[in-house]
Every structure is written in structure tokens, then in C-alpha cells.
Length: 373
Image (cartoon, rainbow, N blue to C red):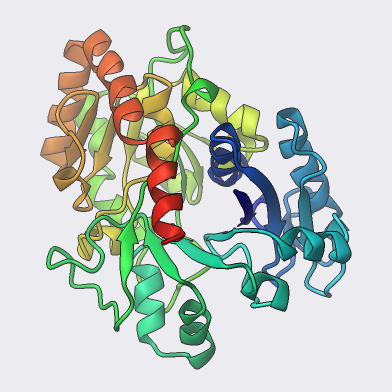
């Protein structure tokens, strides 16, 4: 099958976002599909060197090439700048690829246009990585946004409870099917023990999108801000946010941008960690969306136990060994103690859960089959 995948690698040129698209591309290719990466958001790229949104897309396009080349995909991409200019593949090459493509997968809004060449692809699916936020934005009924989603044959979401009685999020007549982010297990495998005796995470304090429909980690994290004083110095946060405030409460911090500069650096940071301690965005929690982090999947695939806030995901995934849920500070403290008590067992179980639940060879065939019905 010939598949066009739209993603946001240049829009957010950091390791975690890059791996989201990469694992679709690599996983689909491993199953025998032909893949091509597209980015067509109509927005400027973020340039971390200049720390600004840049009219010149050269940082983003260079980043895409450097991210894809090691995997033999260095000539399998196109970036459409805000001004309509094409980089990587030409417009003619993109149209030629689309002319006989079978499936268009739009991941996280990697394309916000219905160009004729995309619309003519027989099967079209959107993959929502921001459950609750996306549906609440649709419910605001901005006509162009609603019409955009009506152009897809299938809508998928990382929110396991979206469209079910378990979550109050309105779906307004749209049918959302659940999927997990796929993980290419061999890319995360490591036999090395963790280099740091710390539970870590990579996080953004407050996102710039969906500001009118929900709350972020700046709200939710405050519920757990006193944990270091109650547990000892077990943490290290790679955070894009108020590092001084967090340090005042005993959280050692690093720059999220620094540890995520490239896919390799992001992977090294996760592999070097003892495990993950993760707090979710406020909206994911309050809506019981069932969202589960692609970042957490990477920790698990590396054999690093994860203690992460429950958004309703614990009804759908094995929780208790290797992967532990918490909703209160007391549950978080208990989870840390349980992991520390038998780390080797939790580490083995983490890897098993990743393979059983998130491995690309398990997730992607079902996604493709459903998308092409």
C-alpha cells in the first residue's frame, strides 16, 4: 500500500514530536508499505536557535532531512512553507505521489489544507493526539474547523474514552475510533542499566494551542508540587516552564529543549532514566479522556517503569507492575515505593507491556485495516 503521512516535525522540531511521526513511518515501512512524509500546516516553523517562529524554514527543513536520513527516508519528504513554497520534494513530485496513493494519514494536524491531491486519495484518516482538546474545539463550531474534519473517512484518537459514557467530552456526531501511538520496539531496546538514579519526564508547562478550550500542566502539576519533600530527591524534570518555581519546591530541572534537541538526544535521556514520573494536562484528567502519552510508551519500550497520572487509561491498559497509575499524591508516593522495592521486576514488566500493547506490528495493521474499510 502507498501511504502519505502528514506530521509536524518542522513545526515542533524536537525529539519527542519527531519520534511520533518516525514510528509511523518506520512501522508502516516494516510492514511492506511505501511511505512519504508531508508537512503542510500553513504555519511558520519554530527555530530554537533564534527562539522564534521563523519565516525562513531552513532550520525546520534541515531538521526534517537530518531526522529522516538515518532511516533511509532522506528523500521521502516534502515541507510546504506558509507562503506555499515547497522544500524537499517539489510540488509536482508530491502530486505524482498522491496520484496513486492509497491512504492519507494526517497525524496531529500535519496538514490543515484539503488540496486536491490529498482529497483524491481514496482513504483519508485523521489521528488525534490531543483528545478532549480537539473535540472541544470542534464543539465550538468554527465552520472551517468542522468542515475540515468532515473531509476524513475515519477519525482516530489517542483518547480511549472519547465517544464513550466514560468521558463527558462532546463528539457532535463525529465517530472517533481509538488507537495507540505505535512504538518501533527495536529503536528503544537497551541492555544498559539507567545512568541516573532519577525518575524523569520531558514536559511543557503550558501549550500555545487550544488555550480557549482547556487547561494544561500548569494547573495539574501544582497538586503534586510538594512531592520531593515527601519522598526524597528522586526526580529530574526536563521542563519548558517555570524552573525556578519547581526548584524552590525541590524538583531538579533541566531544559526540555536541550534534552530533546534531536531524536537521538531525546532517546538517550529516556534510556538514561530510572523511570518516568508523569503528570498529565488538566483537561486530559478532568474529562477522563483515556489519553496515554507516546512519551510514556517510549519509557516502557526502553524497559523503564512508568508512574503516570491516570486520565482514565487504567481501564484499558495493565496497571500495577511496570506501569503504575496515580490520581493523588499519596498514590504517587506509594507507586514510587513499589517500583523501588523491586525495580528489576518492574523494568521487565515495562518492556512486556510496551510490546503487548504498543508495538507497531500490533497497532498499525488494525489502524490501516480500519482506515481503509
